Image 1 (cartoon, one colour):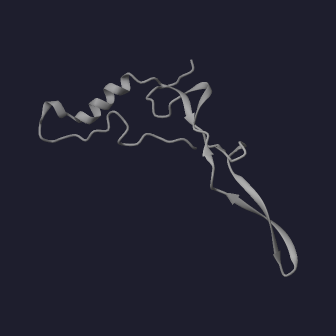
Image 2: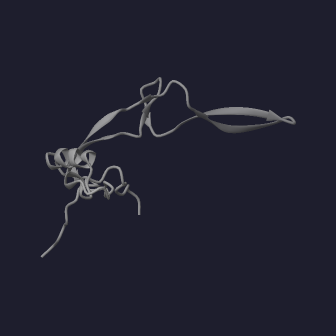
Length: 112
């Protein structure tokens, strides 16, 4: 529930097998081997993430911003909230308090 799983193009052994009998391509193509080499040097931990928060013009930080507007209809005043989507600056990359294990890292976690 939630999180992203492994996709065919990301997994190190996701190459297609070739039936031409080439010994260098038995089930794993060169692109998958290059991915595997870089995967071995990767760390299973994630230290930063992209924030989903935004700064507005006043410097406030939130997921969404709304502005209250007064609408007059048939002589009756009614307050409505209008979502603000302009002039918002993303917070950017933030450092995690505790490192997490990457979702696609092939590690078996086991408690004995």
